[in-house]
Length: 631
Image (cartoon, rainbow, N blue to C red):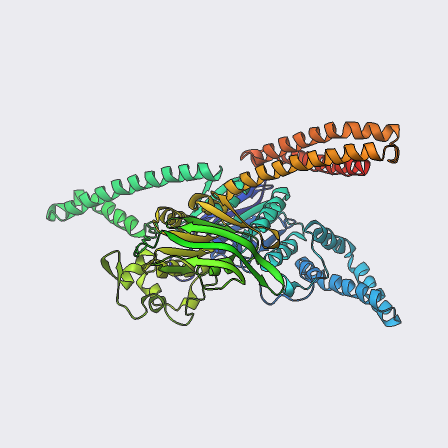
């Protein structure tokens, strides 16, 4: 059952229509991924649905009882107060009452004065009058689920934690439809996985924009693509979408070629002379005019980015050799006793939580930062090109052209001279856009400009710190192919799991207490190796623990409290029961992961979701009981 329907929506901001005759319906429980090139109007469509942008024409059918919430692409910098305050603000007009009650209870806890109690009593009365006690419970419930401390200061949180709070703010109204615009931007891997788990358990409908293909594969039950103002729906997973989209574009290209051939033939005919203007041929002339108008209205597909890296002189065989390097900051161990050797042609991925020290490690590997202990030996003939995730290399006030050219009119790309304007067009900057100031660019355009600068300089070592943020999927895949085929050395920091999987040859992973471990392969390879290591360690620990238990039982026999008959029976039966519940949990997860799951009746969907919830609750109870009996 559709919870919202858009019919023939048109939006234009003075130029060609951004959204043209858009129609879309979203059913309860669906998880819809919205794809499209940068600047095609994806964020605008979300704003139309949320009511922030009013369409020029068209209809939006949504029941008044349907609640819609949004998670913004960028974290607002003007948000202040406690986490409770920020989350409660999602409830609208009654939020101030809840904030006042929350602060009043804290004042009473700290100050037993009559004034504090009087203020608490006044706020309680207002909440009762407004019938808002249920809303306070909603805030407390979502804080508990998100594992958030309501008293913590929002302004002191990391970027990832702020996005978690903003998600809580969106979920507190228990929306029927949740809109997410690039939710994984600037999140580390742990935060992304947490977000995936939260959204998989969310029972409402999702409409989200993302460039993270692994995130999209895991969550989406349907994909809709916004292309040249039109919306095309693909009721399938991401891999199937790629195949169907290629077939659709091929069919469109063939149809356009056939149309253009016929138009050219008619243009030749009309120029043959007076015969074409005779009365009996007026219908053919009118048909030609109609074809001309149709060809003029056709919106051609946006071109692909044409990226080429300027090849520098080959570096020495050994790029960098690191021996027992350690680095501390403000008493915290960032890197501890780390050793590695990076050779020419290696493609090294660096992954870890935000703030772990990935950028610090990069600087040490490049010789830009001296370690506090250990030895770093750099190779010879190094030419480094650096992609900075903070985009500090760009001058906000200067134009795109000036940021790239640095006074040059031509750029030499692997022996061929190219005009700066033409080179920027390869990165989808039209001449008029190339003269715009950098501060007017979108996030995706800024990233393309950084890539244009990066690839215009001769280099044999590419250092890329979060290069995938804000890039559309098509540009991301082209960048991926370019980096994969690059013959020089790559040092890559990224939280994009699929990008890391498809590009790197080995991975450096930050662990606890400054430990940096090296694994062969990408992200998935690291997970497999980590899992194997964990199982090996667990087996050793179990063997060691068994010996300890045997020794302890031999030594202290009779001292351990004997279990009752019922407790001993529970202890014997619990492992089997837990195994059955885990199998059921796995089965239900597999059912929900099927792309066709959310195309069923709502009752069947809810039945499976409720079964999963009951199974997980029973499993948690069994685990707790088992731990109690074991102790």
